[in-house]
Structure formats: structure tokens, C-alpha cells
Length: 277
Image 1 (cartoon, rainbow, N blue to C red):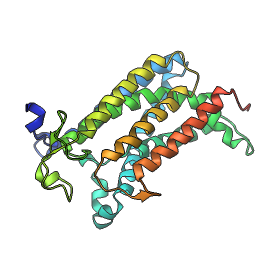
Image 2: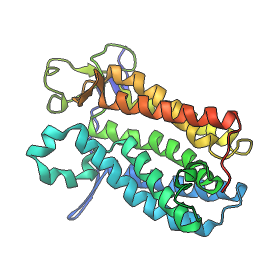
Image 3: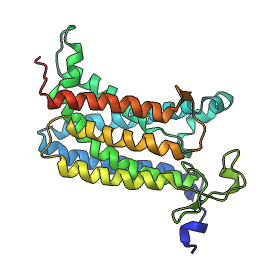
Image 4: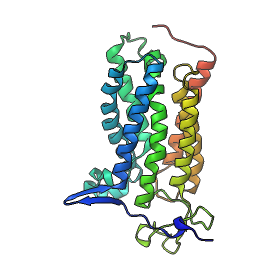
């Protein structure tokens, strides 16, 4: 039985006002940012973090997160952008990688923490266990999960982030011009954007419910565990070309590295190994 989303073909443009064109993708990213910002302001109160700090960081995280996300995407499709370098700047048309956002945000918070705390050369690595740094990571994590849940719908309107051909109930049609090479003769595909959106929304709810009871760092690294495991397996359904690293797609390789990193942190935290500085 066919229903609405079985035959509806979304368009990337939300609105045109004279020479101004507003894309669904850009609008949803903007909406995700502001919702994440207000959620972070609320959560900061529970960890005794001044709202001025959230204001200071929000803009930096947005700008560098956007740059990091775009660079990750460009790297994942390097051959295309090597031949079309100007399109690297067309981020509003789609093409952002969450792992680039996470890495860029992580680095921003490291440098911000170093401006607020003093570390000796010998103890420079101790920043990863600094309570202030881990608290900031926790505060922004639920908003990031919700942002993913919202932002993935931008991929729907761009007709990207879809998976293998499918005739399942959740199938979505892809217009001929948006079908990847080798799949031109298929009409329906797996809606991977939808699977990830739903998953990230439930992760957001879990993080919010656990926020008050968790020690510093647990929220952020729990998010990394959940998302990296999900992303590793969902990559088996993706058909977009990516660099292959040791037999794994780029997204799977990053997922595996992030999972190991997060798992080691949580293991150390559980065993109460702390650094004094």
C-alpha cells in the first residue's frame, strides 16, 4: 500500500524572496543551532556554569563546527571536490559531516579551557580529565544529538543520505537526477536520514534524563558510544562513495576510532583513575 512519502519528491528550496533563496537544509541547520543553544543554556544552570560562557562558546562552536563538518564531507568525496573546488563553499546545498563537527567542537573546547585553566607542560594531557572541560562537553552534547535529529531532515529535502534500494514500508523515492551511478534504474531506497533522525532523538531524550545524575564527561562520551555504534552499522546500508581505510568506509573507520576513544575514557572513569592538577 502506497502512502504519502512513497511518492512525494521533496525539493531543496524552502522559500524564494526576490533574489534571496532559503534552502531547507540551511533553515534546519539554523533551527537546530538555536534549539541546541537554548538547551545548553538551561543545562548550564545544573552544572553551575555561567550563561556568559555559553554565549562565548556558542558562536565559536557554530562557526568552527560548520567548517569542520564541511571539511570532513569534502575529504569523504575528495575526487569530486578536486574537480569542482568552488563547490566546497556551497555548504548550504548540503554536505556536512557530523564527525567533523565533533572534532572541531572538541578542539574549540580544549583551547577555551586552556585559556581558563593553567597546565604545566608535563600535565598538558590532563586537560582531557579536567572537570570544567568535561562539563562543557556534557552541556553541549544533548543539543548536538537533537541537532542531528533535526538536521538530517535537510538531507531528505536534498534527496541525499539514502541507502540501498528497498521495497520496505519505509522506502522513499529518489528522483532520477539524484540517483547515484549504478542505481539509476531503481526508484525506491532506504531512508537512512530517517533512521538516524529517530535514533538521535531518542539519544537526546536519554542524555537529558541522565544529565542531572551523571558525573562530568559521562554524557558526552555516552553520546559518542551510542552514535559511533549506530553509525558503524548504518554505513553498511549506505551507497554513497567514500574512501576505504583498511577495508572500512571512512564513516566506519571514524566510528571505530571514536568508539575506542570513548570506551577507554569511560573505563578510566569507572575505575576512578583521576589526575590532580
